Length: 210
Image (cartoon, rainbow, N blue to C red):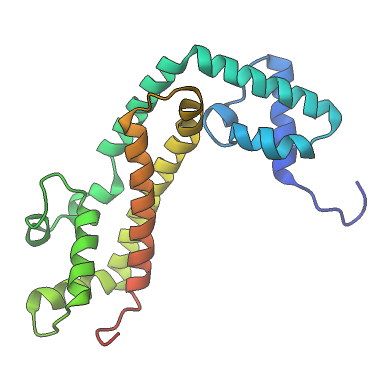
């Protein structure tokens, strides 16, 4: 390695995983768990690897798809179980985000931060400082401490949903047209929660006259 050459640590980590694959003949957990996307390895990192590792990497990609194809139904079952676990333990569903005067306005079972987002968006558009509910809601969500609690909860749920999608979305959609609804829900929720995160992060700087 020449002096000043930039080290690609992701490539080094993949090479280490390939060494383990060569030694153990088992697919690394970093790929099965979605830390590394198999398509990214196939389309990006293989071309960055030395010839020796490129051959091992191609063998790993082939074996990965063979194993996934053989165990597609069990993969779907594992995905549904993981999604159910995440859904039932969402940080954004904590009781501290449930306010009766907000929750009663929406369908039963709605995620509390989703309801808080809808109501905050609505109130901010027609804000009346003389209206006690308007003042209470905006004062609460712009409070730095409480706002950080909201963002922290969303960040935790985003991380969990990202893990499900990285682990399951590509292998299942690549190999089967019959996609479980849970996988679509996870993807949509991830998109929504990222939007809510940005909204509540920015609401701290909101002013009534803006």
